[in-house]
Image (cartoon, rainbow, N blue to C red):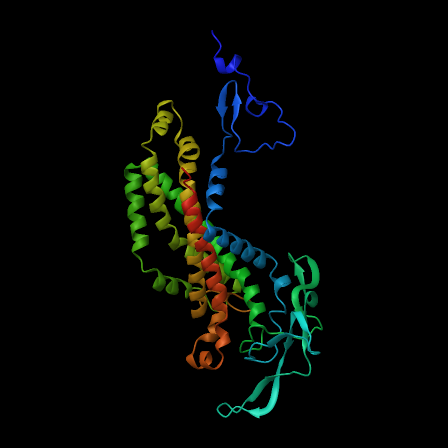
Length: 397
């Protein structure tokens, strides 16, 4: 066998021949190298290709950062909340006014809070004392300050908060509700229940929908016919009236944990059908591909074919469906909580907080009661942006 000229006659530089690079030269993943006379490019796996394309999406990266911050806030909610979510002060207190000017007139990087106090003047309509900022007794703010005690993971006691009042006085960045509880602290703590419900419901619906869709699409026959008729029955139900009807079956006196478990079960029982239809359609297309037919020809079992060949190819669609389903469940939980069918006190969720905004008179007099809507909007935008970025990146080819 004769040697190719590129292998013997022409000496190659060290960076192309695979040898050591000259001093000062940098080796990178994009530098082509020659292995046995052939140019070779560094191979990239599927996840690397997805990440390379995903990080080019500005909206997707913003959504990823926001989702990570939301999950971090939900896990360490007591640490990020400036006050105890159950502490009661002045009912329907407006947000505290703040200034970056210190009491001595100098500029301060951290704002100074001027808490609201009752003045001598009365409101001509409600005849309640008008709240005015107390300019004589400012409240300095700080990071990692001591506050209300709490436990981390229900075990480790702590009393340090990420930000809040340096002198221990109550601060209300978003005002208070009808019972005088801080809205910002309750919104941060409420993210734990709202996101937990959304993640559990999406996990259940994804698991059920994927199993039903793959099994129905791959096995086919009468099983596929009967399963699809059942899926059509589930999809035919008007979901909102059915949610309200099923949630009223549990007694009002039931514990909060039991009520949440029942609501999660109802949402999961009605939310898997659409995903199963989507997975079934992709399974029908994949079952006709050559490598699946080859696996059937060599005697591979159905379970092996589903797990090794079909499931990895539908996983990209499932991941995108999960990120787009979470904001839907967040909105549904907020709506059901607003109607009083999701979470019961003493637990806190965004939907439960919106119950205080149930009348136009309250919204007109105390508009800061609608602040929990901001948490819902941020969560919905974050997961939708992440889903849009993943949808464009899961098929890098």
